[in-house]
Amino acid sequence: MLMKTTTQQSLLQLDAVCARLGKKDFGPFNLTIAKAEKVAILGPSGAGKSTLLKLLSRELKTSSGDIVFQSRPLASWSLMELSHLRAVLPQNSDVAFGLETDLVISLGRVSRAHDPDLANIVRQAAAMAHAAHLLGRRFDSLSGGEQARIQLARIFAQLWDQSNGLILVDEPLAALDPGLQFDLLASLEEYATERQHAIVAILHDINHAMQAFERLLLVKNGQLVADIASNREAVPALEDLYDIALTCMHNQEGDLLVTPLRASSRARKSA
Image (cartoon, rainbow, N blue to C red; front, side):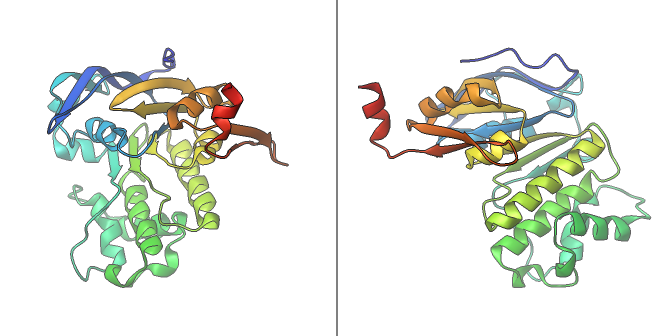
């Protein structure tokens, strides 16, 4: 179930892109990310979500196909050029032992030779990531959730004074409690909207994807199996993706919520 992508101006485009890791093939991926678009990648564990994100970020080389970023082949960009327009938050980010949180956040802007507003940007990025109280501490003294907030602040700092960029994040909410998940999802959405950045995020929570993202890329067995709008009509595709039955309702704020039923219930529904 693949639909045509948005008609907005293209930011990133993949044309028949394939990759090979060991003996496993991924792709071909054909998709377009529009400027200022918010896109969630969903799929079961091992489906190829992180592989797709690594192709988008150029961390992984393609075995075939073309990737174009802002009307230029992605491979033609220097790392310095990319750092001003594209920020990447992988699932696991290693940081040298003993660095202070302020320095970790400022690493997002390391490619700038002249950065007179650095200290102020670090403070504002930390506040947006609900991490202002963590400034001045050693990164390795923080909990997993606190480290995740500092890393998100680093991404905020990197593209703070840019527009029409691209943010690629892999499970940015995984280490956070439910309240912080909603707070940081709202911060990420506000940050990107103000600057017209596009967001592509790997998520495990279907409701986060449905409520905060306009479009869903569904990945399974190394393939893009659906590219669909984030609305009620996506539910059958999500049931196929995860091989579960889902029930739908709206909360008091009008948001669509989906809840998995017991594993056996889908078989009963189709009987």
